[in-house]
Image (cartoon, rainbow, N blue to C red; front, side, top):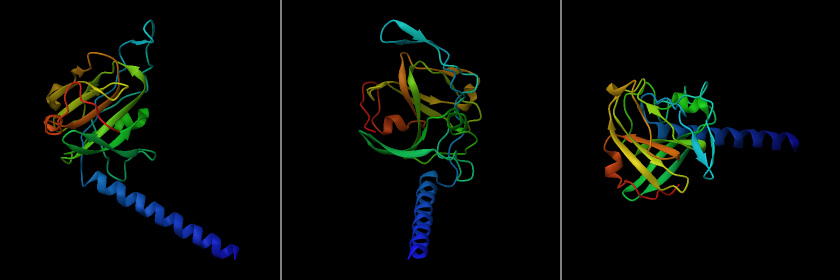
Amino acid sequence: MKTTNVILSAVVAAAAVFILVAISNTLVGSKAMPSLPEYIASSTQALNGSATSTLDTASSTAAASIVPDAGTAPAAMSASLIHAPGGDIYVQIAETPDQMSLGLGDRDSLSANQGMLFVFPQPGVYSFWMKDMHFPLDMVWIGTDKKVAGVTADISPDTYPNTFQPQSAISYVLELNAGAAKQFGIKTGTVLKF
């Protein structure tokens, strides 16, 4: 009986892994996303009105990128859905320095309903650039309350090494194909659900 339970557990675990890989490959598409702008946590951020701090960025980089090829995806990278006024966006979540560094780098394209969401450990003014990007992006700056603080639209890969940052502290950055923010009805003040 124990042998049967062990074998059954192994089969269930293998099936779960297969399903997760299939879902990941569906979200990833064939080839998507160029490099993710390096996140330079270059500015100080006001915490609770008066205290300030700066994140250590020596080992933290981000480049514009989403759903990496199955062979290069960081092991723990997860996916999610963002509900925008104009439809749902499937996003891969970058929350570790390694995931942010990989970003959308060296990708040829991104599917129309896909994006990458960068999740920062604390609110701040984070800088991004277009290093290793092969297509233009919209960068959506999102506050802790999930309200859009601003959109920087149609950023060309040719802008590298220039950096882009929000006007105020944010907790998330959503990268989309150039023009997608407008198509999804995303603008300053929009509240996204995720």
